[in-house]
Image (cartoon, rainbow over all chains, first blue to last red):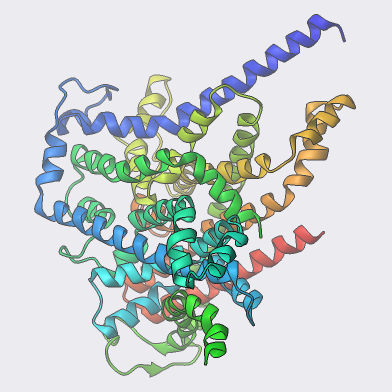
Length: 282
Length: 288
């Protein structure tokens, strides 16, 4: 093979790679850009045919509608409350569990770990019927605590795994030195382990928030009254109760995407690292 | 006293997490069996339940809609897994070829994974709309007949697969990227010196090293596709009639649309068996 031939091959290959990436970029982004553009259109223009890519008369009416409708605002507040509560609970509980796996030797350690990993495989949807009946009997349907507690089953197994692996990257010697210096176990946790584990907590928190904010099946079954509804459910009710108003709906979609998108993009690098640590080291 | 505490300490650390999992995950899982053998509906949920034996399962196997839903599931899962895996693999490999700004591109490509299935479904409902959806507009422009993406019983399942491909591919891409990054680059340098072509390097070095990642990824996306129904529920509600009702959505509709909670629980148990079978098959393949 001559040198110029090799070069030609190299450029052809590069061109092909970039062309495929460009197509994929278009496919990934166009649905969302289309939604974004529609959210700034007036309702009559949103369903005009032929569709226009950019809004003719830019309007914020759709956003104003969503952000002033009492039920939708209520549901947004519920979503934030439930997601933040569920994130805090899950990171706290999983940090304790992960720490036990990373630092202690105890009877049944491997068995408990495999059970937790196995639980990760159990589809939560299969539990919705018993959970519904259970919470109905406790009188806990349509309450935020019910959502916060049931969301945990989606998140805890993953978080324990992730945080266990993170704690293992922190040298044990550091803690032992502090213990010898007369620090108590809790003191070691507070002064050394927790500060050093902050990046791990951040990944766990972002993932927990993403799962909680986006969860739809559990809340649509367990909390579908207007006062306890989360935003995802409110958007769904919105479409089935009335004629679809695409302007309002696309504005709602855009608002629903923003919180997680901002978090995920901010922590993108740590995310890939976290997944590598969390999913693979087993 | 102190030594007892020291022995109990790890269990105390684990207790809160295990308690939550026990009450909200493990107990309901087994309670499913009890519920499926009784007659629980919206009406009787807070009263005494009547024991009915295997009736719910017999009803299920006799229901032609359940048969349809199994067929629909097979198409949905097969199509989704093939496309998500194929596209995810392609993209993760392409982005690993010393592409410019690959970090930014990866960040953009994971966007669909950061949104909820409900949002993805709404976006596609808009795109697939018969009258003013962008897809039919494009078809119109190039002189083709509009397609009933969501109303044609033969088309609707493939529309769902397309939407699910869009929604699910980023996870596979991210997961396999993590796998590719874990491979030591010196192996490739050695292959290059030996004069191996890129395709040969991929087939004989990358793929075998990636195998554990591929198997775990396939297990996860297959199970998720089997159990997934957020997308179908919002996009089509399972319709027209039962044409896009997968077995998972069938479970939801029986339990919460028709109020037949026990029949839903019975369907759930069948879904679990399917999941276990899938995991078993893949793990067998991994060992080989």
